[in-house]
Length: 198
Length: 101
Figure 1 (cartoon, rainbow over the protein chains, first blue to last red):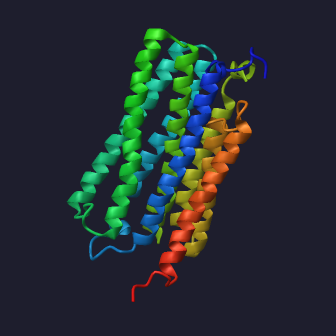
Figure 2: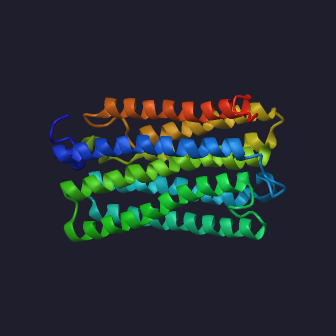
Figure 3: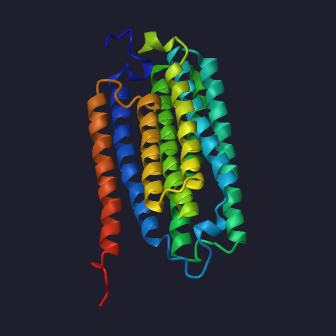
C-alpha cells in the first residue's frame, strides 16, 4: 500500500489507531449483544399467560424495518465510496439518505412497541417481554445514538470539508452503522422469524 | 483501494442485492416450506451468517488496512466468545444443572 492509494482516513498513525480501536470496541459490542440474545433464548417461552411472539409479531412491519435498515447500510457504504473519491456532496447526500432511512426505522420500531403495549405486552408482563424489550431496546438505542452522532459529524464535514480527521471520524461512524445492521439481521432471524414459525 | 473506488461501486450493489435476497429467502423458508422447525432454524441461521459476512467483507472492509489481520482475529475471537455465551447459557440453564433444590 503506497501513500497514494491509502484512503485519507488511514493516512495518519492516529487515525489508523482510532479505526483499530473501534474494531476492538465492536468486538465488545458483539459480546454485549450475545448476552442479551442468550437471556432472550432462555426466557422466550416464559410468557406468564401473557402474549407470545407468535401472538404479537407482524411480518409486514418487521420486513419494512428490515428493508429500511438494509438499505440504509447500503447507502452508508455509498457515502464512504463517495468520500474516497473526494466527493463531498455525494458523501453528504448519501449520509443524509442513510439518516432518513434510520429515522424511518426508528419510527416503525417505536410504533411497533406502542402496538405491543396496547396488546398487553409491556416490559413487565413476562420473562419473554422483558428479554424482548431489553434486546430490541438496546439495539434501538444504538441506532438513535448513531443518528445523532452522524448528524454532528455531518455538521463538522460541512464546516471543515473532507480532511484526514473528518474522513476518519465518518469512516468509524460507518463501521458502527453497518454493525447495527449485522445485529438486526440476527434479531430478524432469531427473534422474529423464529418467534413466528416456532 | 482508491484507484479502484473511482469506478461504479459494484461490490456494494452486489452486497445489497444479496442481503435483500437472503432476507426474502429466509422468509420463504420459514413460512412456505414443510421442513421441521429445527431444519428451518438451521437454514435461516446460515442465511443470517452469510448476510453478516456480506456486511463485514463487502461494506465494512474488515480485511482492509495494515491491521486487517488483527481485525479479523479480533472479530473472530469475539464471535467465539459470543457463541460460548449463547450456547453455554442455553446448555447450563436447560440441561438441569441450574435446578434449585
